[in-house]
Length: 347
Ligand SMILES: Cc1ncc(COP(=O)(O)O)c(C=O)c1O
Image (tube, rainbow, N blue to C red; front, side, top):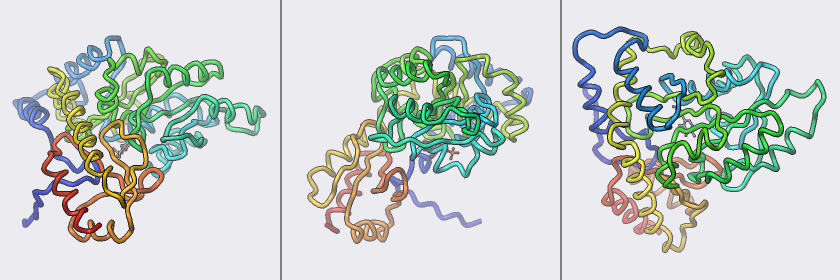
């Protein structure tokens, strides 16, 4: 088989990156002998224990293949089909999951709210809940926040707590899409508990793939009542891996010695470096505060086409438009320099 392998790194997505060495080593370590299937193995137990350690609390942990499943199945566990989920209008659960949250929850409606910098605001939550309270309206039951957001910003602990206060007063639960949770923690310099259960988050979808793992996200239930029969939901949804140790072992590799945060901080640092190189360019406009591992930039169409023509891959349809330039655990300064140098020749 002839597989062409371009060694160059891109800025399209952090899922363009490969597997980091620590996750790879843990996979190799797990690949010895036989082990019980479906999560009854020591690697899965260890990974869940390490997650409990990271969050400094007792919580229920499940490993699934991807973010769409993590979000959809966890939201389904928080709602009945006649409920609604409130989220930002560009949330991944609305725009990029092909209707899976509605599908897996048997029709729970997703209601959209605007908000600056990709963030949900307490006042919009209140407006959305109070605009209708009659039997004909899908009863709001959950708020979903993305941390870091789809446009690369992060919610501070105070912002999440304000959303919690509003949500609690309105009887709403809080779901967090943490596909880039590691980047948010690294950016804020907080402990994971400060922006999750201590700020009212009931369920977190903790991203592994974008952080450096090959495949997999962890669904972390701080509100353990909501985890009841979640294993059945995973199985029915095709998300229960029979060789589970190969989903859970990389988490052990990542969570040991704070590797996950080191890689996230590195990706954030590369995005900061990229931003610093783009800001002085007169035809490039930075679109959102750069707080995690993404830089959003507006540039002339002809330049975008030129960069694509030079073989660079990056998206222009994510969030509210502009070019999304995403850094990963393995992005280097030299990658950024090459990208910017090609850009300068086109400007
Ligand atoms: C904000 C956000 N949530 C969740 C996901 C996970 O999606 P997937 O189902 O592709 O793993 C992504 C991936 O791009 C994302 O950006």
